[in-house]
Image (tube, rainbow, N blue to C red; front, side, top):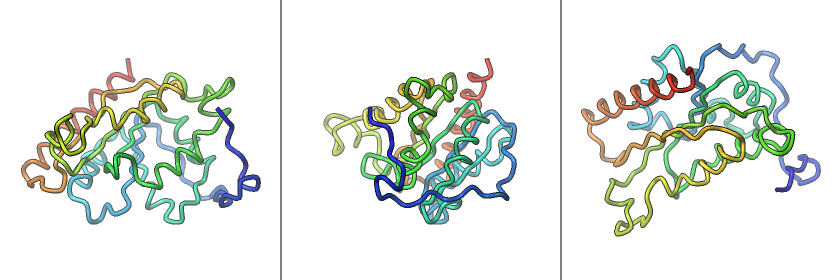
Amino acid sequence: MKTRKTPREDGARQPRPPETAEPAVAARPALLVLAHPAIHRSRANAALLETARRRPDVTVHDLYRKYPDFLIDVAAEQKKLLAHQLIVLQYPLYWYSCPALLKEWFDAVLLHGFAFGRTGTQLHGKTLMVAVTAGGDHHAYRPEGINRYSIAEFLRPMEATAHLCGLTWAQPFVLHDAIRISEDDRKLAADAYDAHLEDAIAQVGR
């Protein structure tokens, strides 16, 4: 696998310089990396996020709020990853993949020599969990459904990333029918998410 070129070499945007006012990373076991470009208009993801924010063992990190210009502070992001044992990626499924800023985060932060490669072992032993919302119902994600494949199959790149970086792949949390979900069902989903986080955090603590 090729190593990532420097911004000067490949013509990419210069990375955001380190911020001297960056607050200290909380000593919590779980880091929730939220990637939703319009969380203020969300119902399903917002309900899940509210549940996560109430947990004293979860650090919530909103990528779109932190980096509206997509200029990621690589050192700060790597520091956050190192400070947590469980990494949770929460996002809506966009065209069978993740929102653009989360992809940029992968490209900028999970560098050769840090997250993968012969000397890139700094994330080894940690756990990666994905929490996604999908607009379609369960029937849409079956061989005979409109999307033809299951959510698990669309999450294979995430699972492969976990494997490459030496991360344990935890059972994903998936919320279907997010566009039409009722208020009662959102509450049930939030409770289920809380239990899912509880179990994942307990697993990394063992």
